[in-house]
Amino acid sequence: MHTSFNRLPAAANNDQEFRIAARFWNSTLRLEMGADPLIIRLEKGQITEVASGHEAFGLLVPSDIVITAPVEDWKKFLERIPKPFYVDLFGATIYHGFRVGGDMASFYAYYPAVRRLFDIMRSLVN
Image (cartoon, rainbow, N blue to C red; front, side, top):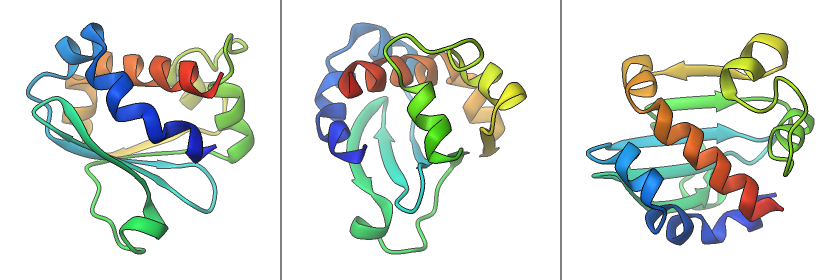
């Protein structure tokens, strides 16, 4: 699944909706997608790096926001047209195996950017 995200920085940084929603955002997101987490670094609203956590950074990667779910739930969440309650992260945390932790003030402040980021990720996977 991670190989689909090699194009994520270019896709997100060229997406007007993401750029507006993410402006001023400095953060490190950690998406736990099975054994190899995906790390997304943002500086001033631009994705500067996307890497598989264990390969690129080692085991201890400081992250501001961590989103975890079983691999099967991530696959359903990233389908082109997700099933009910996989469409949005809030539904996925209430009805499925998703968990969000870390800097929740930043997470909620930039939630529109998070939503758009997942839409972009869906387009890359599909």
